[in-house]
Image 1 (cartoon, rainbow, N blue to C red):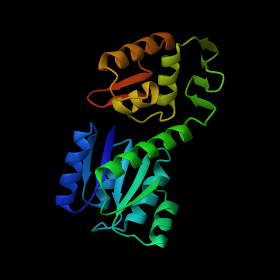
Image 2 (cartoon, rainbow, N blue to C red):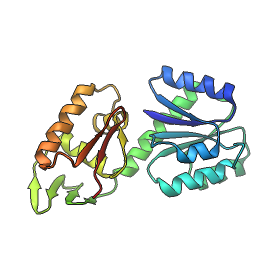
Image 3 (cartoon, helix red, strand yellow):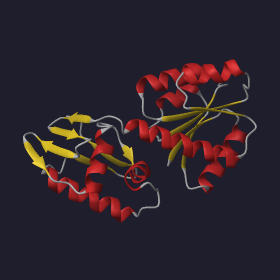
Length: 218
């Protein structure tokens, strides 16, 4: 899973990033609000509420306005109830108070990712350019032609369509389609190749080398 760690204390950031990497996560680090807002797409943001250039609540609101899907966990020393309420109302999915253990943080990450994945899957119809997807009926059309997809091909297409025009990291696709980040690289590539063939438009699913795949939005 790709994690954006927003923390201005370099010692804390280095220790937390190391612990996250040992658990198999890819970590991108930011020390300011500006860096956080401009960061590449990720699956999860660990957001410190005390940043040197802007209040964390404002950063959380801004990120949420531009991305309703990404999971956000506020990580802060602000322990008062009104602080936790403010963080959740600003768009955070969870709120962790320092100091905390990595066992607790990992459990909260897993819980948040389960919740956000279920929320995303509640959308029942998707339209992306010539593609029309009925999520409930598990049917797909390209223009007026219905396309028969396997179960995994359909799940992969839906995962891409929900973030059309945005690069979806490989780990995020593996988590959504196979419910694990341990699926082999070859497995994902084979399903993407099969999906391209059935959609009859090789350029519709674009490869972003070293990152993942993107469904062309138009």
